[in-house]
Image (cartoon, rainbow, N blue to C red; front, side, top):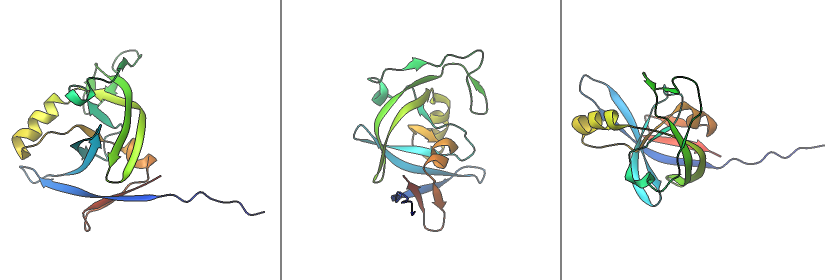
Length: 149
């Protein structure tokens, strides 16, 4: 008996690679949330995808505390004020998904750094949880990222 495998769709989007002072390079991808365009940092070393809890676009989203003992989260530092909520219709290029358990933290310190170094803020950090779930392939030569679902 032959079993049918569901065909995965592939979605390819442009990435932007910015050089930082001191020789570092950071990767960004444009996303759309509630019809507005933003940049997200792609960070394969960050375990969890996070969004900026202070961004005005999220003011209408009901956020809930994560119930946990002690420190909740790590982004090279323990972070206390971690919230979760739902983002409907998160879009990267033609890839679209609802994020039912989006993690929100303050990205003020990161945005202050990016604004001073490269002149832009980010709405969030695309971490390895998202990249693994959607089988991301980042092609530096072609300047794109492919996601599958």
